[in-house]
Length: 279
Image (cartoon, rainbow, N blue to C red; front, side, top):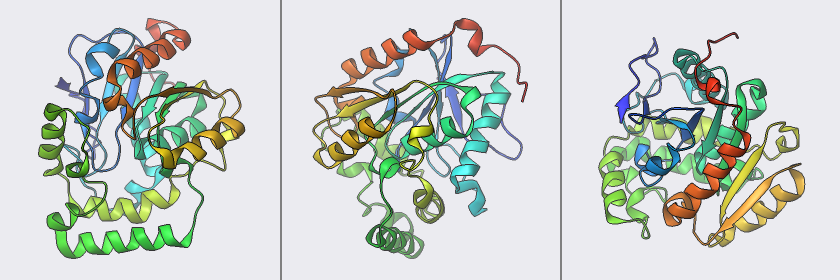
């Protein structure tokens, strides 16, 4: 992979495009405390149907950690995706979000439907949750713990990749290495400013672009939300795979086949990745 040379000013999210990839663009947004390694088992297969743009969240992997809380708002993230799209010279693209990234992907599609060809997402309680006081208290407790304990406290959060048990060794090793790069300040800010805004549940019936949920049915806690999304989201396509929360890793081959089919079905043609910004 090569880093996008068009760095934003001020510094933007780190983004990479696999060497030799061509065609319609798809923005890939990983989950909380993950990194570009989330998509390691997918990129070779997906480059046959799209030009992947792999972004890393604020303070994750190689992305900077802004001090301004506004950068971590959902609106702030959407603005950063739009700056990246414009710098790449892309008129419209697909977006694919995993877990935490699913909420960002759905909100992006709701805010800028003209810029989105279609949206795919995986299991994400945070993208479809109903607000409750217990969740608020948990987020604040985690944020405070990280502020006090720094990197050691990060290792105790339930999202840390060291708790992933079903990942191939190479992927898990890379994720653990990238987890050492996570900025604790960014995690505290995300817990306080991104997560509370992340649910798109109250707006999903307004989505006007093709939407695909690739569901890992082994994550039993997500299945009621999967069913609710299918009831309330007009035109939602759901494909159930025999995987867990990180279905793109657990069932990489079937995930790749499913997403490639969705991309090919809805892609308008190769010109979609080479136009100039007209916003």
